[in-house]
Length: 224
Length: 387
Image 1 (tube, helix red, strand yellow):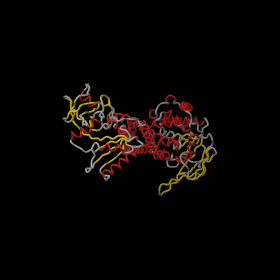
Image 2 (spheres, one colour):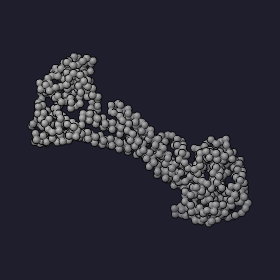
Image 3 (cartoon, one colour):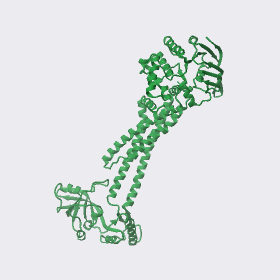
Image 4 (cartoon, chains in turn orange, purple):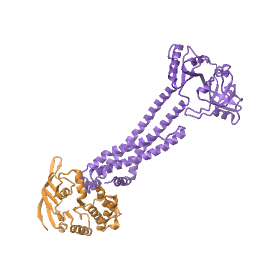
């Protein structure tokens, strides 16, 4: 499903070149539940941005679904983000002025879906995360756990094969955090490919495989 | 991605910050308002002036004489009638006078002419009779008055055969003119017409400085004018003692002047519209910075450059478009009110209103382009990181 080959990423900070990723090769099978663990500054967020097509590697090749997308242009990448990948962010990243339903609908709008179809799919997604009675609330009227579940619904609405979760429980209390993790595990069982990024070993234990990233390199490739 | 959803999103974000949106729109509103009002009033005034001039007839030629060495008396004026292309001629002598009847007094413009005067100036007799050649030759003290003057002096009484006093001399009213309708040049019904000979003797002058000539037709007015000029050059020996101009030329000159004025006013108003556009660009740039994170989120879930570009372009053009509609409506209302007050004919000028609206929309698109492009170019990863 996901195939990274010798990915490097170098940031040009004026006079200094900072190498954040130093030749990462990684393979994720379809339906796999992978956790990437590492201390802050290890490059794990950058890696996730690579996988999520939010950023492009400096060198290396990236195959998603067998297609090399490291050569894709901005327009093609936005299509990949829209159809193949669902994001779950630490800070939820909901649009504050839109209701929960409208937030979930957004990726479907960009996909060009008709009003009726996207409304139905959004309602289904919100029902799945247990928020069918909060659809018309604004994010500010929801608790952190509920906001994260709206974000998960948004990631699910487009039915992408890959879910990327960047510290999904980082801003939540332990109760909501475990709810969210339960939801993610359930999605994994349903066949989604899930890549979870965290610095919390306990959360990482939930995944089927854990890899550790340190100083921009993978140091362990073990199955937990 | 359909336009409807994007437009809805644009409206949502515009109305989420009402005060800012209103103030930004205000620049466009004032700009469009100014353009519509100034051009409408300018054109109203122009058409008012041209109407009142062309109502006198397009075949009229005016001659003004400043010469001291030679001068015309009222009989010499007849010589013009022999020129080719000329239909009729009247000398004109005007002054202001106190006109009295019984206890009523009005200050009104007095015009002396011959029997052709009324015909040339499109006056029609309403009741009684007109000035005739005998009146002119015998210096009869008779007067034809306009309806306003008649009402002022006589109220509802019949003025015919009543004696009025003009600057102390007694004249008999022989006719009342048909109502002519007022124009920007004043009420053309407040007038007293008398034989020029009588008025000049009363004022003790002999020289005629102003002559109005009617050409056979408007086609012939140019050739008639040339003939008149040649005759005058011959008569005076130089071309500085007189001035000849036709109604057409006057119309043209006035049209040029008022057209220029209108264009200038419109241009000044256009500048304010431009300033309004810069206001939109300014606020859109602020908006893009403020909403960097939102742009990042949208891009992360699949919005392409085009989606973001269109979203911000629609926001700026909705602001300018709505501002344009409000400005144009206020402008139409205001110019209607002003022309009513000033007594100018008002015509709703669709091209100007449409033009101002389209221009404001274009201003919105143009000044929205740079911020929208800036927004669409943001890299999703950078935009998401923005706090």
